[in-house]
Amino acid sequence: MQKLLLLGDEAIAQGAIDAGISGIYAYPGTPSTEITEYVHASKEAKQKGIVASWTANEKTSAEAALGMSYAGKRAMVCMKHVGLNVAADPFINSSVTGANGGLIFVVADDPSMHSSQNEQDSRFFGKFAMIPILEPSNQQEAYDMVHYGFDLSEKFKIPVMLRITTRLAHSRSGVVRKPSREQNQNKLPENLRQFVLLPAIARKQYKDLLNNQPAFEKDSHNSGYNKYIDGKDKSMGIIACGLAYNYLMENYPDRVVPYPVLKLSQYPTPTELIRKIYNECDKILVLEDGYPIVEELLKGALSLGKEIKGRLDGSVPRDGELNPTIVAKALGMKVPDVKPIPELVAGRPPSLCKGCPHIDSFVALNEALEKWAKGRVFSDIGCYTLSALPPYESINTCVDMGASITMAKGAADAGMFPAVAVIGDSTFTHSGITGLLDAVNDKSNITVIILDNATTGMTGGQPSAALDKIEAICKGVGVEEDHIRVLKPLKKHHEENLAIMKEELEYNGVSVIIPRRECIQTLNKRMREKFKEKAKN
Image (cartoon, rainbow, N blue to C red):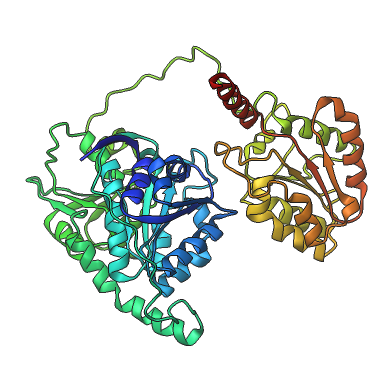
């Protein structure tokens, strides 16, 4: 079969195409973005008529994928770990509705917070939902697990989580493809009330979910992805979860570990395999890239058994991602002292791109707020969050998608004036509209600045759901038309923009300012493509 050099994300995407998906839904979020981008760009996916959709947010992604599953087709929904918080409602409830066509939730966790607000481990959500979880240790497994996951989903009529982490998502390896599978035919659920979660139906289906747990665990025990590998030295046993298994093996070039190893890549945790390694070894080292989920399971509440080493006792750092050196130290191996690389070039903090339209917006906002004390600007998640850094130092918060508007509302309710929210166009349609509606309903005294650069800039320029709709949305939720102001953020318009900002800051009520200019990166890309097209002709 064909062998490809793929990122972990790309391996999952190609696996989905080959496994017969009919649709993939996502809101862009690092480190998961490249999965959907790969399907978007795939000629094969287009030929097969696969729907590849960027959605308004992760909740709408999950619900669209659940609808495709309802119709009998295979569907995938992709998000980063904090995106699962947004999709939690349909995600948790889908374990009770079950699936019809195969349904996989791909969740990309970000230990060490390379581009995220926290390190949360999505295995907790999977355990909470009581669904099978797959955690590949390399790119080939990521590809293979997509095929296996869809089969598992349709076998048990249940959604399946595929959990990856940043290093696997963004590193490359050779991947051997399987034969391509045809897409499912449309087929409605046998029980047409399966997806109707009225309490009487939900109670029965929840019991079914509980009754299926032993079958999920049995499948996990028998899965080829969970392996007990014996070792001669029983002084320690090692449980390596997902990518941590790769880090372990990197410390043994001959691929022979002297200790017994339990490789875990499918959950629920296989109790018998855990019991086997626990009974055979004097102590246990748990390696997991994320939270100490398996370690806590082994220790229990009182920790009265054998020594369990891992993140909780300091054998492995409590935060951050694993790497081969951390694993070597936990194994008691000698690790050579690594001298720090000398700083040949001064470090440069991240900054807004030269020519970014947000620069002119923040310069005007800073000047408009000069007569008030600092600390009045609530921001959101996007490239504009870099305005927290010098030289602008414009914003004071960044918590989660959409929080800028609702935090500004709460501060205004507490008596803060002025209270300013700064949010991007894509983030506004993701999670800001409902907060604006609350502010309108309560006649809150806030100024909302929606930075419209016509794209989802931070993740690479995916389409924005807000394109050409922002004024209509604001008017639709009740913002007075006279206080929906559109600006052109350019230096030559500075005085005009400044006057409008000052005017709206003084207004007692909800006002919306929309600085609108195309992202400099997408503009450059568009102009390059236009030049290439012109050169061809």
